[in-house]
Image 1 (cartoon, helix red, strand yellow):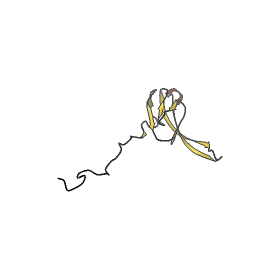
Image 2 (spheres, one colour):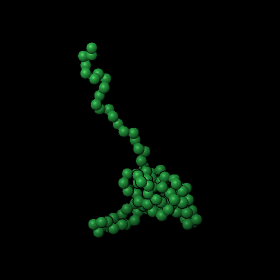
Image 3 (cartoon, one colour):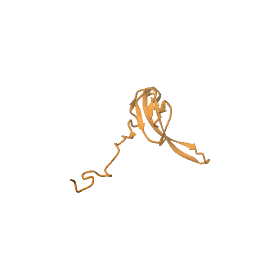
Image 4 (cartoon, helix red, strand yellow):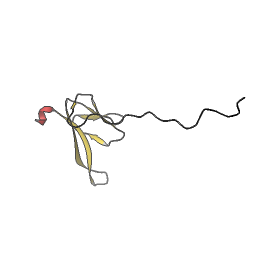
Length: 96
């Protein structure tokens, strides 16, 4: 007979697997259609030209080109102007 109730088990010690969020392609890198640029929760970065947002807020490329990060002033719901971060994919020809 065991004299300890649940020896060796614990109610603590559970942890979730890391989700590998973050920027996957930095500014100036070449992106192909379908390449993931950013994995995120919420819209910390917004989709610009040639970039779409997935169902889990992932930003991915829709065309060939170079990744470009920039800030843009956007009017908030309360009427204030705030800088928001955008990501776009511009063609290499347009950069020259």
